[in-house]
Amino acid sequence: MTRTWESPLGPVPLTRWPVRDDDPLQAWDGADTYLIEALLERATPGPILVVGDAFGGLSVALAAHGWSVTGWGDSELARLSLEVNARRLGVDVPWIPLTQTPPASPTVLVRIPKGLKRLEWTLRRLSDVLPEGATVLLGAKSKQVQKSHVALAELLGPAASTRAAHRSRLVIATRDASECAPMAKRSWSVEGMQVRGRPGVFGEDRCDPGTALLLEEVPRLDGAPRIVDLGCGAGPLGLVAGARSLGASLLFRDASHAAVASARDGWEDAFPGREASFEVGDAMDGVEAASCDLVLCNPPFHQGTEVTRRVAAHMFAGSARALRDGGRLLVVGNQHLGYHVGLSKVFRSVRTLRSSRRFVVLEARTPR
Image (cartoon, rainbow, N blue to C red; front, side):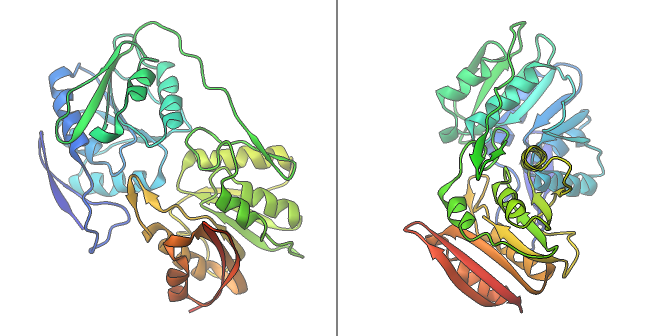
């Protein structure tokens, strides 16, 4: 659904990806408005780098009013949103994944991410390319901005938070000449293999309890099955599946560029010379129908700060389409999410394999 943002630059029609007529949520918030207001007060000549723009609103609003804008982010869903909104407004906004180095820019707008480690990683990488004197404006809803965010912004140089406005708050930093070392790499072990997650990736430094429960149900398959680690995060499910089914063809798939890169790092370390596929994409979109034998999935139930089952439902529907006859989907989720209801809409057979006080592992077979 398209809604119009009355931005400080003028009205901007925006939609969210995936585009749905019944989507009740808007593609911007008060932090976007506040960031543009602050930009108009402080902007210096030159290109603007927009970091973590979830639906492309900031980027296309600026591009439509004459600024040279580049997006830098991790989410493929954000890139798709930006693409849809830019096309509608007839503007061009290049987008670079967070796994690549951003361009040097005198002005940077940052949507503060949910995790502090992802923000720290982002700022340390920005410090390598930003010119001295560059202005960095970081924004989020007021309740999300803490003293810890100001402390992290000081990695770039002097930083301070602003007063609240539009139910949001900014942190403003100026790049100085100080050095900023890269973050140390971290890893953890699963069945003797090293999981090498990057900051902000799900499962970056430990095995969460849901994944641990699902790992107990990862089967040993004969022959040459095709196995998908869907929403792979740092990739522990795919690593264990590959170790237990040595003839299998593995596909690691996630909407996060950093997650797919993390999974690749772990696979190449565990299985040097053994091929696997690594894809950034929206759930199973683009995966060939009836091509997979097993899908392993620990679905996210947040989109930004919003709790939602829509992402999981899209994963379930895509898995049903991609599974061969006799194939199955193994899913883990919090008990309260009730994933069995959504699975039953697209599969004829859904049963519980294992459960704990908080989590349940479900097996789905026979697509409807």
